[in-house]
Each structure stands twice: as structure tokens, then as C-alpha cells.
Image 1 (cartoon, rainbow, N blue to C red):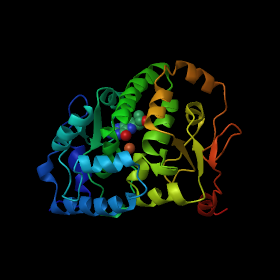
Image 2: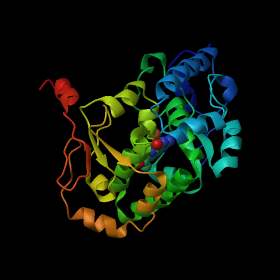
Image 3: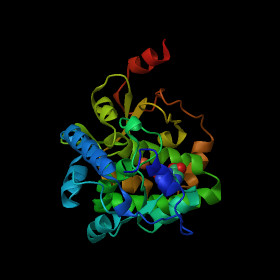
Length: 290
Ligand code: HBI
Ligand code: FE
């Protein structure tokens, strides 16, 4: 029986290829780790009902994601590949940006092979297999979002050449990780960082504290973000087609326009915002003791 912390270490020390992929070694997961996946899955699948976007919920069924222990990434990739050509490749931890973009540009999603230790059951900073597979993989089964993610990878490679990575990281953060979508006249979740977090799944849709602003590429590229708490602003797209159309352009010109404007703090709104909800920011003030 491997103890909790060994999961991360087990992979950290594993031999890796030049593209930072490792062997998932699915047979080395302990019964405790499989059980932890099942508990994470059952809880989040329940909370996601009525809150996750249709595409994510449909894909969870199509990909047969379930509480049957930690998924085997090769078997999961066989199903995903048939839908959108994407595969899920095991990595030990965060990989260098240029490696990450190279994978995305080739329809490979690098997923952490380790599962969080029990003491981080409710929240962890670094993407583990539950965040990556429950949060990110279902969206890769949607053909339009699958195109967006490949385009994002190619955009990332170019952004690195232009020294504009920070702007593109903000786009990733406020869409792929923390994006909301209008659906049937309501708001639903597609961002993996929300989808894999029980508390933020409720907070992002139902709490009055955060701002909710209509998607605007330049506005997002100017907006700072926080990594260790709920988001203070969520951006809302009308559809995945709209997201892809907005981003299917050469970002060179966008970077130039963004450069000439001041950055926006995570909690701020600006006059040109199409505001869906002006947050009270109460949750954040309380936490800051204000
Ligand atoms: N590596 N494995 C992994 N997963 C990520 O989500 C990831 C990464 N490296 C860099 C990164 N994300 C972000 O900096 C992107 O904005 C590039
Ligand atoms: Fe993520």
C-alpha cells in the first residue's frame, strides 16, 4: 500500500521522454488512490449536474468517465481520439511552457499522472489527474473547443516568440481554466479549474461576490488573475464557436493594442465592460478582513 505523498514522488522520479511524457504505470496506483478518485468523481459529478455545460456532461458519458477507479490514459485516449483526434498523455507535473504548447498544438493534452494526497482532497494548487481528466478532458471531446485548444497551442508557440506569453496565459486562465458560457438563457461552466472544484462550481455561478463580464479578448489579455483563491471576475462566452472565432486570428495586432492600455486588476470592472453581474466582492473583503 503506497502512502499518500508517494503518488507525486513516484512520478516525479520516473524516467521521462524529451517531451516530458512518462509511463502512467497504471498498475502502480494503490486501492486507496483508486478509492480517492471514486470519491472525488462521485462528489463532483453530482455538483456538476445543472452547473456544467452540456458539452462537458455529454462528454463525461461518451468517454465513460466514472467512479471505477483512476482512468487508464491510453484507454481514455482511444475513445477521445475517435471524437476529436485528441489524446491524453501522462506527465509528472507542470511542464515547461514551450513543451506544453507543443503538445497542445499536436492535440495531445498533458495530464498529471499523480492523484492529490488525502490532505489536499478539497483543493490543490498543482493540476493532478482529477483536475486534468475530470476538468479538462471532457471539453476536448467537443469538436469546436478541440479546435480552439489546438489553436491555443499554436498561438502559445507564437506568443513565446513575441514575448507575449503573459497575455496568452491570461486568455487560458479566463477561458480554459475559469470560463463560463451562456446556455439556455442561463450561465454554465466549461472552465476546468471550476469544473474540478466543488466549492468554486457553486461560487462561480451562484455567489454575488464576483464580477461576471461578457468575453472580450483584449479585456481578458489586460486582466490580472489570482491563483490561490476563487476568481474575482469570470468571463462569459456566448458559444464555443464565438470563442474560436474571436481567437482565430493573428494575435500580433491584439498584443500591440493591449500593450498601450493599463492592466486591469482581477476585481476591477472597466467602463467598456458588457457587465452581466457587478460583483459585491463581499467574499473577498471578508477574506481580506476588510
Ligand atoms: N503543464 N502539465 C501542465 N499542465 C498545464 O496546465 C500547464 C503546464 N505548463 C504551463 C502551463 N500550464 C501554463 O503556464 C500555460 O498557461 C502555458
Ligand atoms: Fe488546468
